[in-house]
Image 1 (cartoon, rainbow, N blue to C red):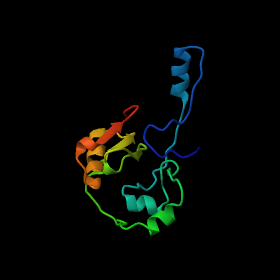
Image 2 (tube, rainbow, N blue to C red; image 1 turned 120 degrees about the vertical axis):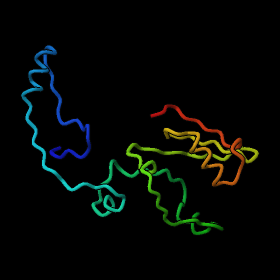
Image 3 (cartoon, one colour; image 1 turned 180 degrees about the vertical axis):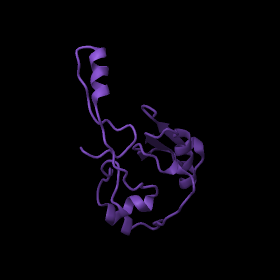
Image 4 (cartoon, rainbow, N blue to C red; image 1 turned 90 degrees about the vertical axis):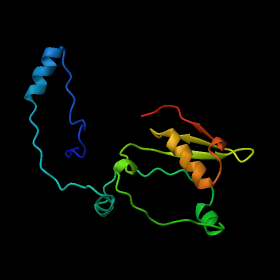
Amino acid sequence: TNEVVTTGQVIGIIAAESQALARKAAGMVKVEYETLPAILTIEEALAANSFIGEEAKIEDGDVDGAMSSSDQVIEGEFRIGGQEHFYLETNTCLVVPGENNEYTIHTSTQNPSKTSNFLAHVLGIPKNRVIRKMKRRG
């Protein structure tokens, strides 16, 4: 690509027969940057259609039909001042209902305790009814 969109983005690779040659070659690389408008808010990202990666969804069955036939649908928008809720890395979770009002949450978050606590709060169940599983963190 000819456009750098994030700090730390790889812009090239040098292959050499020695570390000294690689360092010499790296010193010969010239990069010119053009300052682009900063996208700092979710609204700016939406307006510019600027997203990191493709949208990921887990859907099974007739989602629209299930939503339209649900007794309760909660939707809306809320805003907070902290950036903690706009992570750049991909986060996802899958919640599986179990026996005795227990739920297992498979998550990729860096804060599994907070995620499982939120789930318990949203479902109105005790925290000890949420089993969390996470393969790796970070």
